[in-house]
Amino acid sequence: MNCGSLQVAFEGVSGRGVVAGWTTTYHESIPSLEAELPYLCVLIELIEQEDLFVVSDMIGSDVDSAALRLGMRMRVTSETQIGDLVVPRFVPCEDRERP
Amino acid sequence: MTWDNRSKVAIVGVDISAIERRTAVPLGSLALDAAHKAIADSGLTARDIDGIATYPSAPFAGARNRDGEDVVTSNFFLSPILLDRVRWYAQAGAGMIAASIRDAANALISGACNYVLVWRAMYVPAGKYNELPSMTVGGEAQFSAPYGCSSPPQWHTIVYRRYL
Image 1 (tube, each protein chain N blue to C red):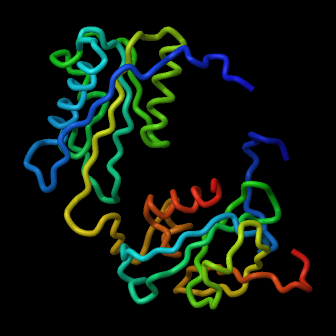
Image 2 (image 1 turned 45 degrees about the vertical axis):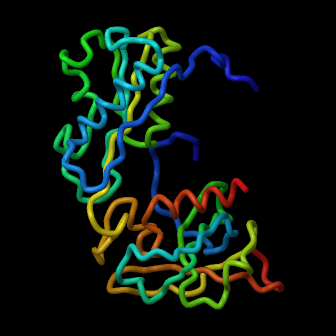
């Protein structure tokens, strides 16, 4: 595949990546998430390609912001389904796992 | 690597309008106020301005697009009563005001004009900033809003953390 090509299509990915950034949200702007405040949003860079990012959150995880590091290896863990929507979330890779 | 056009353009004047809360003053009037003050700050006059650039998009979903009320587009400033010497203009669709400053710099370097007025006029409605009451979103937001990442402060913070 060449840069700038118009031949684009969906491709599966491994669900593995590294932490590329995060932020803690204290301010309610989405009423349906009010009960989750404060919550962590994370940016994951997938291993398939540089600058290929996925936004996710750490809602329901016991990982807090102090435990996060840039470059920390993550893998997709659960696909929370809301109606027809798939909401992938990530957890840190176990040490024995390869990224 | 040094940019070939380094130091070939400069910001020569800057100013800001009054910032008001729940004002009855139209957005276009505030933008004009800021523009006149910025032009005065530069030592130029409105007749010197031959280029204009803005990023007019409202900073919240569901905004209306009345020119001079909800947004202040290039077209608003193209009125011959305000600026009658404009020979180049641009209106950025993405990239916020930094895109308009980029556009202005490129126009100046190319020789399309001599002095560009760049402005950013916006307001936020009553209520919580960036509130997203809907349970469904489309477009780009579908990849971030479901994770509670729906507002510029969050986007900036994530990038800024990488920078740090």
